[in-house]
Length: 128
Image 1 (cartoon, helix red, strand yellow):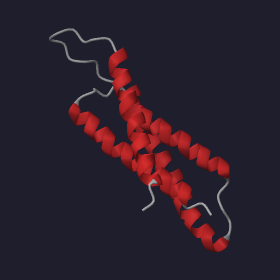
Image 2 (cartoon, helix red, strand yellow):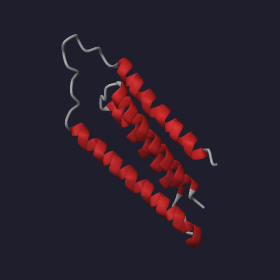
Image 3 (tube, helix red, strand yellow):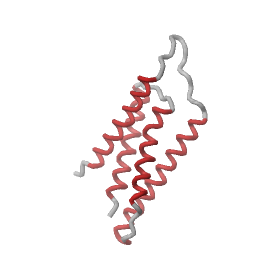
Image 4 (cartoon, helix red, strand yellow):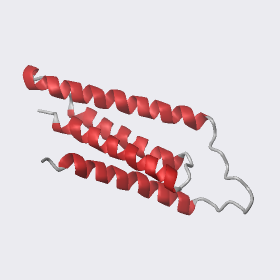
């Protein structure tokens, strides 16, 4: 069994949950009886755009990496760096958008980050 996808998933989980914990730690405490401030509505569209870009880029790298085994035409290395940057932005977004550090949201971030790490590893491993 190849451990690279599992290690990549674990690293992404550590990054996303660590960022969520740090953001929670440095965020000012909410006074008793008040609800935490809601993120600005514009942040929702930013997250959707980041995720869409990451999915398109990673899907392109997976498809062309797979096809390159027969055609010999591999994607440029710079696209893999762009995919890493997009993946990192997607993983840091929940912390930057003000997602609360609760068990419910942390569990969602863990599963999402594991999927991001696994797909980024798959894209890199399919490069010939």
